[in-house]
Length: 400
Image (cartoon, rainbow, N blue to C red; front, side, top):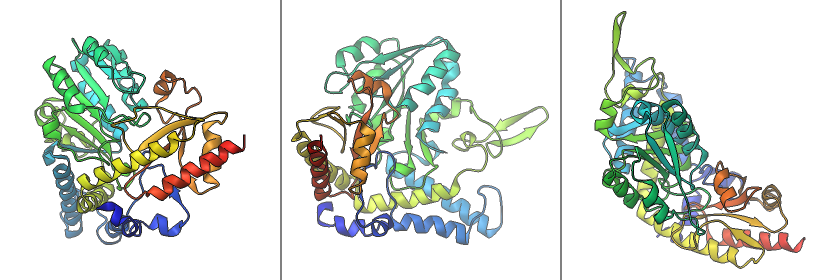
């Protein structure tokens, strides 16, 4: 059980040794990295830093093999096949990639999203809607920050594409993704899922989930920055034209035309972040050693403690449901701007996020017009850190 070895796990993260007083509660923005991942990145640069899929010398072949082995490791972790895994630079680029690839299929169609979305799952679809002369529908959420079933049933008929966040980065809502996918598919819609806040915290099987596309970021789950993953249904990926083109995503180029490379490489133009991909493969191995079931179980306990402790502060108001929520809490404290809350907590060595968290429409839906302060946890957090957060907020209240 994780709670019996949190101290040991934390010792594997250099950031906590370098900052012994640090209480890090901003993992929804980016996670910390274990030494094994950092060492793997250094190993590549020190020992076999060579571009992939190009050289036939030993060092280049070593880099290429590790790069593709990481793709297989990631695919297995996600319950997918390796030729369904496309490397991008982040979740945002993954969503944009598929949005532009789908543009011809969305001509005068209907794109349905929800009020829970991050800007990265709003703005790309707005851009595509304007180019494709498509309609955008937005499914409402209720007062608990959960998707309105009635509004979903009303807006899903006639949908060409449904795109939604598996877990909200503000409300903490864990969406019943399988049910939404099933209902959308029954209407003949394609489905894309923003999994940036889900993949680090729960066991996934994308084949079982049934969505056509699933996007996530390595840096939110112990991996290097600058690397994203786009899972795509193989049949669709084979059919779609790549929206970006350049080196290495083609088999042949002649004066008269070109032949695209096989999936997934036809969606990976130019030199990829192969060092990041290899580092992410190491992060996946680390997560597998702990076990995603164990991580999910432990974080449910942390989430319960976080909510219970902060609910004791009568001056605090939060967004999202009381049950079935991720281990994060976005809140406001009477009389204080979120930035002031974050600055005060920083003086107590507690690192949280403040602002709109790239989800301004959702904040406005709940009347949080200045944004919110957000504490987000990962398996390296401990109950006593939550207690320290609660005590610091109570101290801040007394200063009013």
